[in-house]
Image (cartoon, rainbow over all chains, first blue to last red; front, side, top):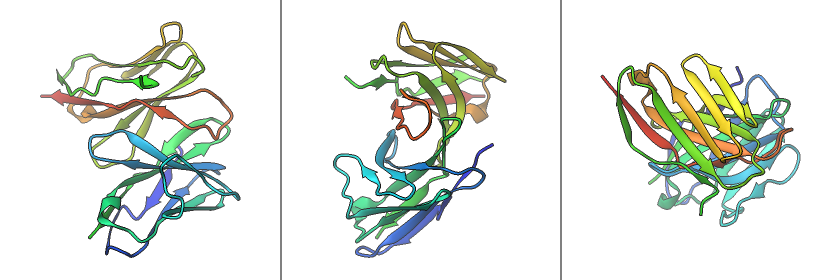
Length: 115
Length: 113
């Protein structure tokens, strides 16, 4: 089946620094990838839709200058959390849309802790 | 009112029980329905994907969609402790890819020995 790989699975960074999270579709091309944030015991909150070769579409309330998304190829999207603060600590999950089947697969998620 | 309603649980059942998980929705445009299983501290795993109304079976899992009632269900037969997880329903209105999903809040399931 389709596999979406996310890296790193866990990262700790100092307040004020930036951290990059990668999302790769391993056996299919993904025109569209999605980035979510999930707080403990809550559902997924869509942050942005990442389209290959174009600018990401951000959901209302998500700071585009803080959460930089790049979708440079059909198999890779990256989320960069800039000038991270402790309140950015969360579980970030990507998903990739397998175009032909309209099925959406998720990565394993990345735990970000800002200290 | 949320577009998708799902009882958060927790739902606790004995091993071997039949589990019924449900979601209701308000947007009649939704046509594609998915169920995901999410273990603690992991990304969601796609369990079932259905289009429009009807039933779909895969092993111990059966997904039902009743578009007239705007109601979807996931049944788990012979539940196992390894089924303990949070189950998320999700849906979208368009096919062809690139479409955002609308999620339920997730139901936490615990299958006890």
